Image 1 (cartoon, protein in one colour):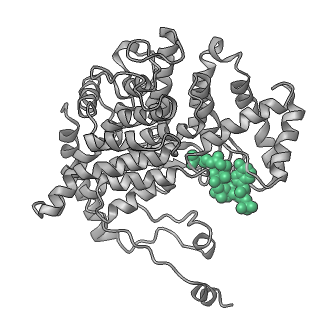
Image 2: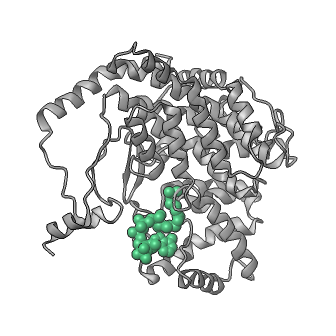
Image 3: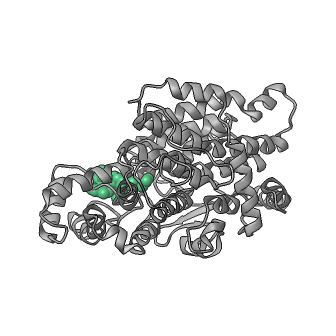
Length: 456
Ligand code: AMX
């Protein structure tokens, strides 16, 4: 089956049957105990959400339908022009997330083409709205506004209003919205970036023959053939940048269901708000400094630290700098995680990207500092003794690599994260409707109830 929707339809009957069987026969089986600690501490460790495609192992990191990042890098198809030497395409990951199957080259080519065609034209009102926004408006606000505005064209919302579709068919219309939303992201992202750096004037062309990440790069002004080529990149460096976007977007798609952006999208969608409204809400959460905005915080941190230390080799000075931060009750951005307890394999993947290109990155002191920090900070954080995970998360490497190629608008990084993150939570939204999951409504408890339970 070459068409993604048909491939999903093919696996639906079996999955529906499995979940129905579990619901009918095992609904009373206990998953775990909820403690008072979990209630007042951000629901940590509380296993109470169903998530279809990814799980986060505290030690091994993320798995996409059971596959690690390294396995995905081996198995998922890349762009034809890279001849197997580049990164896998986020389109390949989207296929895996939606179907649970590794796609063939041909399936990925078709999906790439379908997304490129769907994304060739933004709805005129969204384009106009983006043009009208203040140039200094927070890029994530611009993204959330653009996505929410696309709800005007939601096929699911329209069909639902008409009352013409049954519950088991909702997914088909949600799917259409989800694909249209993901397809629109390169143009929206390009428009936001050009609002910030070029007074709204386009920095590149949308090329319908190319893949989703290539178009993001082009519209940021970063390809040789389809952009104004903002930083006079050579063909080789431009190809590397496109592959950086592919890698970054391929591995940020999902991090199981409980993180703020994924959970928000799922929660809002459970009220049957359409995918545009649901993901726009997820984007609002991704904008927080403890979540997606951390990449920007890291770049700022590295830029400041580089000014303060004589050399990246000066371990003692770097340690002192870190202690200064910790002693002033600030966090070390890019370190720690709510679930992970080991270095983030996504961090390793980003670091490997730089390590594979020594000529490119060796003389970039900030990139070297990022690498050096991943050796020093865990020791300092362990000594500090508070954080449960003293190791680098993905954000400690990602922003600084974009910065290296000249994307220096720090607040903008999270928009690229927002492009990638659309794929996981929105695949889940399709599955939420396939499986007929209900509106979410956990029970909250007040202080008196807590005291009663604790007998105090
Ligand atoms: N630097 C200093 N202190 C840290 C720390 C860090 N990097 N990470 C955690 N801590 C502190 C916490 O603030 C908390 O202190 P408190 O008891 O005084 O409130 C204590 O250690 C225990 O926290 P935890 O259970 O280890 O982490 P958490 O689940 O509460 O929070 C996270 C997780 C990611 C928000 C936190 O580690 C953090 O703030 N990190 C820095 C920001 C960051 O890198 N965020 C990106 C996360 C990945 C993503 O979503 N993109």
